Image 1: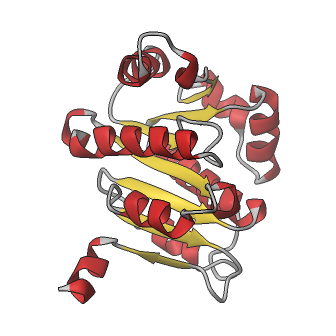
Image 2: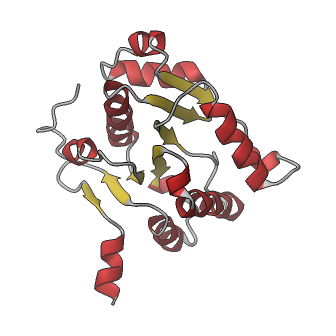
Amino acid sequence: MVDVNIYPTLKDVDNLNEPNHSMVLYDNAKYGNLVKYRYLENGLKKGEHTICLTHDEVTLVEDEIASLGIDIDHFKRKNLLHIYQIENILERQDGLKSGYNDLLKTVTADSKPPYRVIGRTISDVSTQEGIQAELFIEHLFHSNFNKYQCSFLCTYDVNGIEKSKRPIWIAQLLQNHHNLIYATDPANAVTFDPDLLNTFQD
């Protein structure tokens, strides 16, 4: 387990105790993984069914989790850790909303609420089509958050977000999450409630 004195932002992750829809924005995979898997580990330790969404091979995610000292075999045996390589729902003929609803049903089929989920639905958000699809899903989920009985940490590599309108996309992502964790080097990492931005704008 990573020492919170080395990476203090993990204290903020530990304090996300209530059901929440949060996002981690990172500029280095190392720091992103520290936050993602701390969030995952906290759920597992609480006995929550914890679901990890990935577009990569499941074994790659297992190796990342294990490298941080998390006993994945133990939590798998307890049927608490579930890792899914998910489909590209942009290719669904029946539309994005239908694909998303089916995806949620699939990944929660072997779990019991309250769930804890980490990951992102759309793999490639470097195009306008991809980020707009992801924003549609984020808004759909966030506006119906209370019915899902879960906590969800959405994961974004800042450099992977479509660059021509990146500040706009990030601002819209903030509007559809309860918390932002900016995972960068320890001196600059920060966690805050996006609603505070509205306070400054008023």
